[in-house]
Image 1 (tube, rainbow over the protein chains, first blue to last red):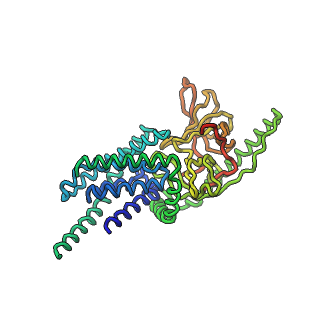
Image 2: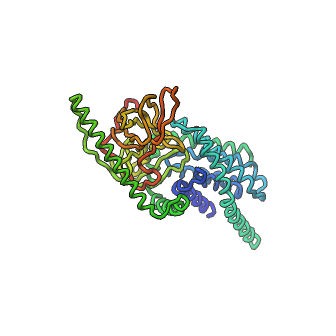
Image 3: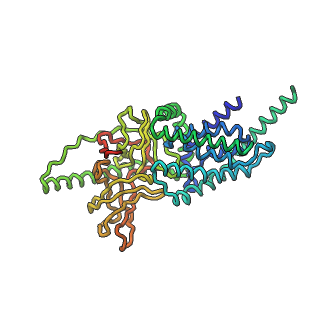
Length: 170
Length: 272
């Protein structure tokens, strides 16, 4: 049940990213809420769930855009490596790792995307893209991170408490 | 979780991505993409409209916006008419001078299409329209704004949807000519800046305000299609070529509906 809701949430995030986010460009950069949600999910719920949810969200997003299907997955997957060893201590829920994941993940995402575009014969204005798009997006994504992280954390803690109370009563 | 497990997972994702990209390039995933867009397009429309309404105040969308938009479209139409008349004059002069018979071009036919999406990628300027191969759309066809100025080219056609690469995209290169001086060059899109008309001879009398239209060279674009106006000329005296910044006539950021020029099918060079 929780997994189904999580999958639906990721699909909806991909949909919003594809259809709504191009209309917002603070500092000239389009925020990547799919990447932010993925990073926050890893920080809040751990890596095991993310291993299933990330590919679903990324592939669905590619199907809705002009991206070659799979290109976003290759960009977003390294988030799991950037997240460190959080599952070793599931009680530690930290915002700082989410910030680090989002910032570094944004850059990794775009560099891998740029490499794929280059490999497919498309022109990528690397320097201009880095200075005018990707670095501002790192900042914008980092600013948005708490707005997504805190509700996710609240939902996660609420579920944990409810599960704990159910197991205590039984 | 052990690092090795994450590495295995990452490796699997790389393999899946590589397979996906490969299939996508061979157009084998087109039916899946078409289905995904078909299923989600109503919901996407709702989300997009909401986003547009929310973002409008931030973009400076203000009172009188509709009137300004109508004036811009009218301005675009007048520019197109001016360019057409000039082209006609030039053609007639050429015919008189050279005595050649101009090959008869079929009457232009257009197919209207609604914009259903914008490519969210920061470094690409592309839009999705609600017409596809089932409507007779082919890759390479021209897309013009409501006032008939060039907006872009169909670069990917699915069954019911197509992706249009705009003239401002860094991957867009169009053979163009400055109408006033008949100076030919190549118009290239640039990231975060106006497109630039390159390879202009140093002595060419190009000045701000000049009209830039497609030259028709190469056969991928029809000639005489309005692209925009020169707003500035760049380059030092010692440079072999100079460049001109061109402001597209079609207001690409305000497009809601576009027209696909279906009567012109671009020539295919062998190996394309």
